[in-house]
Structures are given as structure tokens and as C-alpha cells.
Amino acid sequence: MPRILELPASEIVRKVKVQEISVEEYISECFERIRTADPKIHAFLTLTEDYALMRAREIDSRIRRGEKVGSLAGVAVAVKDNICTMGVRTTCASKMLESFIPIYDATVIERLKAQDAVIVGKTNMDEFAMGSSTEQSAFGPTLNPYDLERVPGGSSGGSAASVASFEATVSLGSDTGGSVRCPASFCGVVGLKPTYGLVSRYGLIAFANSLEQISPIGRTVADVATVMDCISGHDSRDSTSVNTGPTSLRSHLIEDVSGIRLGVPKELFGEGTEEAVSKGVWNAINRLIGLGATCEEVSLHSLKYALASYYIIAMSEASSNLARYDGLRYGFRLEDDDCDWSEAYSRNRREGFGPEVKRRIMLGTYALSAGYYNQYYLRAQRVRTLIRQELSRVFKNFDLLASPTMPILPYRLGEKLRDPLEMYMCDVDTVTANLAGIPAVSIPCSSHQGLPIGVQFMAPPFREDLLIRVSYTLEKNLELDLKPAV
Ligand code: GLN
Image (cartoon, rainbow, N blue to C red; front, side, top):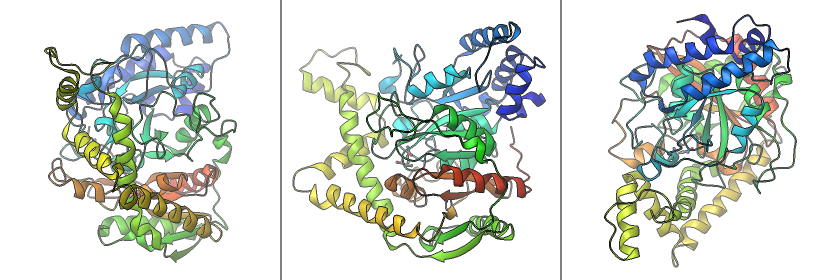
């Protein structure tokens, strides 16, 4: 594989600016790589080769003319297929949106383009981002680049796998309950879920609005910081967007953790946690202690109810969001719909949605229905408040909370498909950050039998700077020997 594909984003930008390489050369190499690796891992649903090469030539000629180019000049970005891209099919990995071509760009896409990033394609995911393994895509699963018999995690599995296998330099996913951190952990890459409201959701196809954020994935902490600095900041088209400018996380790539107080919540090392995972995560924590951080175990009682509360809220919001797909206004439509409208709705939805999506619409509708609303939805919201309160108390004594990202190693395809609850349980360590709206990162910290293990750090709202500093220090001080198999 050509070395250029292994370089971090900042190096690519530097090299293309001094004309050491052309964007066209590098982007062509990316597509060469995609042609060899993607038949094995299936990270992409749509490739945008012609567009990417055209953009590449255009950026090259601006550089040759001595014009100014953006902070991501030439960098190949893969984008999860639930983020709208103008003129490029955006399917949510669902038959329902199989032929949907947005007429506008999501804000994050506009911002990437404004900094001269090059979008190489749209990545596979669990249908409507519902899942943790990317097996529940209507177009077939993505496979883990470290072991083709195992899942890459999800729901942003394609985004993580494409970066892990050097098909793209960075990618965007979305994280509603862990969908960026989970595949980052399983694929040995870095994924950062920002504070709620820091990155615009305009153009993100909604699953559960109050929980989700578009989130960057990269092979290094620096790459993730670079993408965040490009996509973050206020957007008047998203009413939940906070009124701040873009982050400057690149200025926090500092190798120093002295005095950082780490809390380790017992509840996030629960009974289902595999020993190899626990060992790997403690190894990373101890490393940080050796570098000057302090650490203390804590108990956060409300976290016991986080998973149940997350699933009730996420499903309730999903049932409402997905009501718009009836096949009449848009979405999948059966040809022979010569029947009354309610029959047509049902038939289109029956055909267009996969089983997990249907399950969630039904459970969510149930949780919101009269008579059950107080018992389920309202109660889940109360738990959410308790979690937020408990976290804001604990952050008075600690700078960050450390835990496994996933309690288990990447598992074999099909292993958790039989029982949806088993799949849901895997999200036990990630959902808390979404319920509380706080930032969280997953970075590779160890491996077991060639499979990557991720450590998760959570920070108080808007303290992405701390996450970046600690992850960067850890990255510089762990000798990881991770090599994908593709
Ligand atoms: N695995 C979680 C779920 O299925 C999270 C999904 C997500 O973050 N999009 O809901």
C-alpha cells in the first residue's frame, strides 16, 4: 500500500500545499485502495469517484496558481449514509430511502467542502442508525478489517472500517447512543462524540434528535481534532445548535496529563465486561497515572438505569421521526398501490423498513401511547435528569471519567442478531454520554488476539479540549501493535 494513504490529514495537507504530491494522485490512490479492500469489507454504499477526482484537479490547479486553500485541502473523507449530500444518494442503509437524492448538503458537508476536503463516498450503517454491528443494513453487513468474520461495530461501521483500512483518511459518523465510539473501538480508530449542540444536525436524517450528534472518526487524535475544528460551531438552521464559534482543538494536542483527576465508575465495569477489555482499559489508566494523572473509583448509582432509559427515549423519538416515511410524499413506494391510503401506507412501510426499525417503531409508539406514557417515556426522562444531575456532581471532583467503550471484544457475525436485547446490552457504557449531552471519546488502548480494544473518556459539557489532551497523551505513550488484516 502506498505510504501516502497512511499519513495523517495534516501531513497530506502540508504535502499537497508544497506540491510534493498532487491531490489527484492521492485521491486516485484512495480509490485504488477501495477497489482492493472494499470487496472484502463492504464499507461503502456509494462511491463518488468522478466528483472526487474533479474536485482534486480543481484544488490542485488552485494550488498551482498560488491561491489559498482550506485547512483540509485534498483530504479524503468518507461520510455516513444518513448525512445529506447534495446530488449524492443518501439511503440510511434502508430500502425506504434507496433512491433518495438530497437537493442540499448538510451543514457539516458544506463546512468540509469549504475547507477543500474531498468526499470519496457514503458509508454503510445499520438501517436508520439502529444497531451496534452494521449487520442490520438493508444492503448487507460491513466486516471488521481486523477479522473478516467479525462485526466492525455500529451503527457507523462503514465509517470506522473505511478509515481503519486506509480507504479514507477520516470519516463522519453519527452517535446517538454510541454509534461512533462503538465502531471506533471495534476497528481500532479514534471516535469523538461532541457535546450536544456543538455540531449542527442540519441535514442529518433524524433517528433520536435529543441524543444524536454528528461525530468525526480518524486514525489519530490529531485528525479527529482537525475535523472537529472544521465542522463545529453555531448554525442558525439547527435550533439546538449552541451559540459558540468553532472549536480550536488542535491547540490542545498537548502531551501533558499532570494533575488530571480521573474517575472510574464501577457501574461501567459491570458483570458483562470481558476480562481482556477490563485489563486493557486499566492498563491505559495506569499509564496515565504513571504520567501524572490521579485516579479514583467512584459509584454512580443512576447509571444502572441508563440503558433502559436510553432505549425508551431513543425508540420513542424514532417512532415519531419515522412516521414521515409513508411512500406517498417520498420514500419507498410499491408499484401496485391501487388501494386506499391507509392500506398503501402499511404496505409501503411493511416493505420499506427492516425488522429492527419496525420493532423500534412499535416499541416507541407503545411507550408514548396514552396510559403508558407516564410509566415509560416520562419515567425515562426523569431518569435522564437524575443521570445529568449525578454527573454534574461527580464532575466537581473529577476532570474526566474513564471506562471501557465496549464491554466486549468485536464478536462474530450473527452472534447477537438472534436476541435484540443482547445487542442492546452492548451499549451499556456508551449511552450515558448521550443522555447527559456530554462529550466522550473512544481511543484504541490495547488489543487481544489481534482484536482492538478501546478506552472511553467522558468530560463535562464543552470540555472536548480535555478529551483531546488526555487522548493525545495516551496515544503518544502506548505502543500499540494494531494491524488490520485487509
Ligand atoms: N446501538 C445504539 C442503538 O441501537 C446506538 C445507535 C446510535 O448511536 N445511532 O440505538
